[in-house]
Length: 406
Image (tube, rainbow, N blue to C red; front, side, top):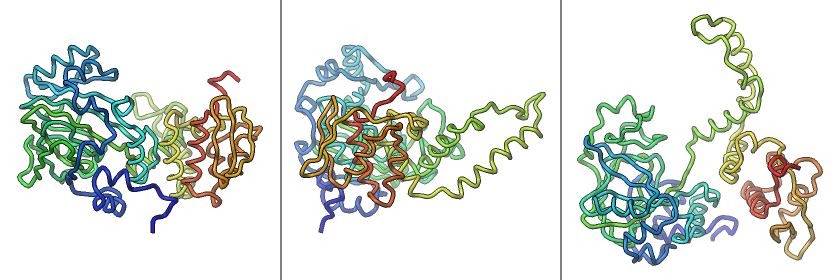
């Protein structure tokens, strides 16, 4: 029996099929690549992506365009191109063209994409989703490389070959990289970079995608591609933080909120520096930090990581400071809960959230998001708190006092 409080798996089933959707629900992220077959019509994409001439699609695109090409040494480079005609010419010259952030345009049903994100167990917010359109000319492809995040490839037009292999050198890298890239080697791969070949391993898996096929590639897996004919595909990338990032972000926020940690690091081991004094000062800072870390609990970290994803427009310090206050709003009870009327919108909030919502909007002191979560702890489920905060933000019921000049 399905739990009505949990997000529907239907969007994920549309993407990868019912059996695979159930596997994802059990394992969070499936460790092996696979292909799901179906009709391209099941995706929330525009008819232009399916049938418009490539030149026209690239030239008329109103977002960011990038051209991918090889230099004389075989290294793959990316160039941002603002001129649509120039980008279309690059395609005819043998360079792949990407249309960035296509999920923010009418070409893609962003609502459907966010439903998939929620079905994967993450907040349904645009910051956690990146969708890119790849137009790859015949006879070309991407050299061997890896991407940190897991992703889905939605093949829309043409056919495209993929070779995918497990990354045995440094599983779960935090940055993308390839042997032919000119970017610095990520720290976790430095010890292995000299031994990493530009060729795919002999035991790699081969997939040939046609229109309507979806390929899932695990995060950090090596892969390369090749097209025998011009191909159009969409990469669907959930921007999922690592466990390390959850901790790092919390520590950065915590330390930046304290003047003592923001002070200049005087006396480092440089010529003329007082190293003994610097060590003593740093020991004095570390002692209370160790005690604070011992009191850190998983629930707090996860709640704050969720809010960070929910409200990406806020900086680390803003998110946990009492900087936001309730906007002027009229509150009235309705049959199903609570109705909020602001100058921007009228929204209805579920009765279970009414008390917290009323407290947030009637508070005479600055409304602090962290305080709202603390008040709700043990009363509301984290998903309910996130739902309320999303509702308040979308209805412009939270106002930044500093930016409004009030």
